[in-house]
Amino acid sequence: MPTPTEGFRELAEALSGIGRLVETLRERIRLLEGAIDNFPGGISLFDSEMKMVLCNERQKEMLDYPPSLFAHGNPTLEELFRFNAQRGEYGPGDWREQVARRVALLHERKPHAYERVRPNGTVLEIRGMPIDGGGFITTYFDVTEKRRTQNMVAHMAHHDALTDLPNRALFADRLGTAVALARRGGRMAVHYLDLDGFKPVNDRHGHKTGDSLLVAVAKRLGSSIRDNDTVARLGGDEFAILQTGIREPGDAAILARRILGQFSSPFDVEGRDLSVGVSIGIALAPEDGVKPDEVLAKADTALYRSKAAGRGRMSFFSAQAA
Image (tube, rainbow, N blue to C red; front, side, top):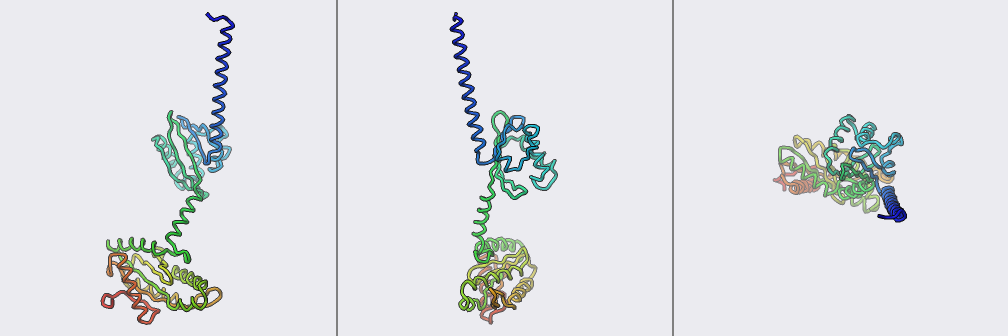
């Protein structure tokens, strides 16, 4: 049997061990708090009853959480849903339905990852993961600039750098879709355009003025078409228009005449009145072909007919004249 002295020594050693354990736990808690506070995005943790256990300052700033949201302690996830829905964070719609839908998904306890555009335009990448014990952890990252850069790169890949019109690649993609619809009973037209007299203007006034003239031409062409049509710059002084949903060849002729009319007055370019004309070749689908390259090639053939006939006019593709 231990003596009182030995018993005291054992108790002291046990208390010392507990003290070291407590200090170790405190150190780990400090490390955890430091990691959470320095997390590059927002992070929040919810317990098994979906009560918020922690939420770092980055998340509060990123999602504009007011102090009043935490006035009576941390909210539950459902209360957070309600707060967001009522302030329009989830977009238009009945806020009760928005909350109910999110609570139902929450009970499924499935990992999730999605993007949400806030009313202020911020794009958030949100990831949620259920954890052992019934809780949930959610992270938020602001990917607005990343998405803006990606959209800009995608736009540049499919648009002409000078005029900002769709380029040949995007035109070919839309032409493929339009021809596919024509095969199923629709009708469309391709207008192949080439400027008349552009080279002399370019040679006389320089490439900078020539580029400005092309931009002015692109604007007039864009004002001539409907929202569901496409005008593209194929390269140099060549343009093309994809006209969809037409009922008869006469609809294509109406558009072509409108375009010719756009070139009846000079263009104001850098304080100069510059005049150029345009020749147009037209091919129809499905009449002239049911393959994109075929329809475009026949519009090009019709364009040469217009130029050979004196320029400044339109021509439909004709198998007899080809």
